[in-house]
Image 1 (spheres, helix red, strand yellow):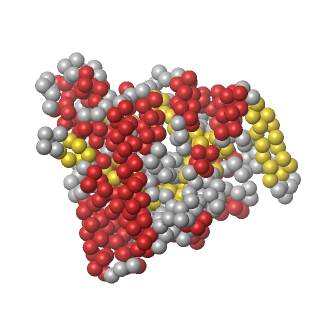
Image 2 (image 1 turned 30 degrees about the horizontal axis):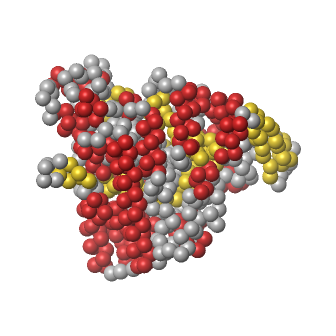
Image 3 (image 1 turned 180 degrees about the horizontal axis):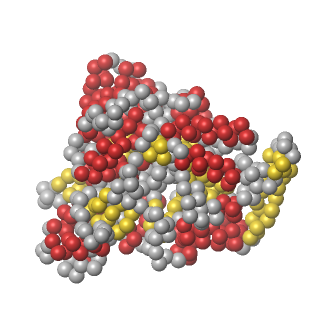
Amino acid sequence: MELNANARIVLESRYLRRNQEGKIIETPEQMLERVALAIAEAELHWGQASDVREMAASFFHLMNEKLFLPNSPTLMNAGMLSGQLSACFVLPVEDDMAAIFHTLSLAALIQQSGGGTGFNFSRLRPEGSYVRSTGGTASGPLAFMQIYNAATEGIKQGGKRRGANMGILNVNHPDILSFIHAKQEAHQLENFNISVGIWNDFFKALHAGNTYTLRFSDAHTKPIKRKISAVQLWKKLIHAAWATGDPGLIFLDTIQRFNPTPDIGLIEATNPCGEVPLLAYESCNLGSINLSRMLKQNHMHEWEVDWEKLQHAVQLAIRFLDNVIEMNHYLHLELKRMAMGNRKIGLGVMGWAEMLIRLGIPYDSQQALQLASQLMQFIQQQAEVASATLARQRGSFPFIKQSKFYRQKRRNATLTSIAPTGTISLIAGTSSSIEPLFAIAYKREHVLNNQTLFEINPAAMEILSGQKHFSEQMLDEIILKGSVQHIKQLPESVKRLLKTSLEIDYTYHIAHQISFQRYTDNAVSKTINMPESSTEADVEKAYRMAWKQGAKGITIFRYGSKPDQVLHAGLKKEDEIVRVLESEIHDCKSSCHL
C-alpha cells in the first residue's frame, strides 16, 4: 500500500495491531488483509470457501489501490475479538431515569468500541417542571447532556480516542433557548455536536412574523405551552451559530419525507456528523469511494472520469458493506434486530476537490455542480443495481414490507451517504469528502496524540509545478499564506482552479451539498466554511438557502470563531517551514469518517 508520511503516522497511531507491550505487530498491508478476509468470510453464508478467498482478494485490491476505504471501526476491529464494525448509531432518550442511564450505558459501550452516537433529547421534561414521583422539579435536557458529555470524556473510542455525540433538541421544546446558547461558553459540551431539530411550521411562523408555540406534554407532566416570537428565537439561533458554529440545523420534515421505513417509526436524530438520519437503535456502516482514483487520461492526455472503473468500485463496495452487517458484533439485541432488519449502509465519496483540480474544473462553477449531480446519480444507480443483485442472491432486507421498497428487490434500506472522511482520506492520500481544499498548505493541530501535521496538497502541486514561473520562492510564499491568490505570476485560471474553502463563496458550498444530496438517500455532511468577516446576515441566508433547496441539515463554521479550531491556513510555525506533500483533512470527533 503506497502511503505518505502523514498516512503512516495515522495508521501507526490508531489502526495497526499492537501486542500487549504496545508494539505494532502488523503492516498496513497486513491490516488490509485482515479486514478483507474478515469481511469476505460473510460469503460462507451463501457460498463456498473458494468464494471467500476470491472475494477477499477483490476486497484487498479495492482497499490496497485506495479505490475505497470503509469507516474506521471496520479498519480497526475487523478480524479482532471486539469486532464492532459500525461507525454510527442513534439511541433513544426517554423521559425516565432508568431509561436515560440505560441509554448512557449502551452509548459508553458503543463509543468504547469505536462508534459515534446520536440522541434527540426532546422527550425529556423541561427544566423546572414538576416530577410527580419525587415531588421535586426536573433537571431538563441540558443537565442530562452534561452527564452524557462527562461520561464521553472518559471514554476513548476503541481505546484510541474519545467518543463523540450528536445532541438534538426540537425547536418547539420549552428549553430551546437554553439549548441554543449551550456552547457559547468555552469548554461546554465539548463532546457534542448540537443541532436544532426544526419543523416547517416554524419557518411558516418566521416568514409571517408570528409567534411560535413551545410545548411539552406526556403522561406524567401537566401540558406546558408558551408562545415566543419566532423572529426573536431565530435571531438568537443565528447569533449563536455565527459566534460558535453551534447549533446546526436538522430539517426534520425533509428527513421524514425520505424516511425509507415510515411504518417502523419516525426519524428523530442523526449520527454525530449528520450524514445518517436513523431510527432508534439503528446503526449504519459507511465507506467512501476515492474519486481522485476514478480518472483516466484520454488520447489527448487529458483527464476524464473513468465511469467503468467507478461502476466496478461502487458495486464491489456495496457488497463489502453488506457483508459488514453479517460479520458485525452487536452490543445489544435491539441493535442487531434493527441492523439486520433494515440493513442500512452508506457509501460516499472522498477526493472530490482533487478530481475537480485534475479535470481543470473550478469548485465554484456550474460545471462542477453539474458533474456533482451526474456523478452522484451514477453512484446511486450503480448502488441500487448492486443491492438488487444481492437481494436476488441473499434476499431483500427483512423489514422491506414496512418500507417504500416493498414491491422491489432490494438488499438495503439505504445505500449512500456522504461522510466527512477526515482521516480515511488522509490514509488514501486525497482531499476530504466533497469539501474544497481548506488551504493549499496548512498545519493541522491536536490530531493524534497532540501532534501537529504539516501538509501541502499534491494535486495543487501538480498544477503549480507545471507553471512557467514556478520556483522554490513561489512555493515558500504559498506555504506561508496557504493560498495562491496573492501570487502575481500565476494566471487567473490557475488562481480560480486553486481557490480554497474560505475563498469560495458560501453559496457554492451549499450548492455542492445540495447537488450531492439530490442523489444520496441518507444525508450529506458538509461544513459550510465562512471567512471571519462573515456577518450574521450571511449565516441566516445560508440556513434559509439550505432549507429551501432540500438539504437535510446544515452546519456552518466561521473561521476563527473557535479558539481551538483544527485547521489553520499556512504552515509558518516558529519561523520554520515544513513541507509534507499531503492532502487536506477536516476533523470531527466522530468515527463516522475516520
